[in-house]
Image (cartoon, rainbow, N blue to C red; front, side, top):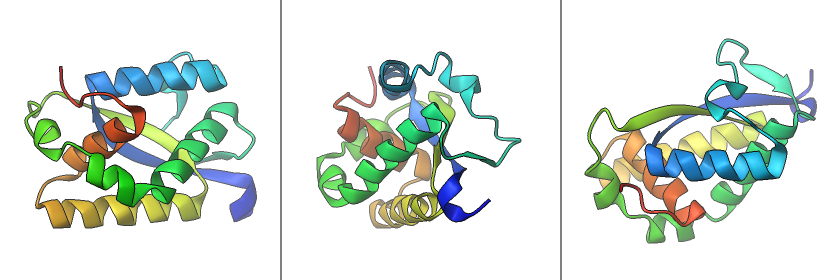
Length: 135
């Protein structure tokens, strides 16, 4: 498969409130019934025409394209206050170049914030989804 006809997986850590809103959005947009099992981390690639993959690719396109704005709106302190066991590992699919861009942006933000990736994943995606990082 070429870069244009396959998707790669990106693992992100999200608090339950952020995960729940994301799962609901993906159910409405692409019919993803169970986000937890939809993407198999044992299969690192999937076809680009997969509906759930297309939806998460579009999501990551928006997040990477608007990263600076989302970074400014992100509540890193609230995300950092989540208990260590309060995060869910979630897999998203996107074009390989987009996955690489997202990883780079998340890692840079973690370095700037002097925090871990789960805090950054949660805070930025919470800002994108319009949800509080913790209940």
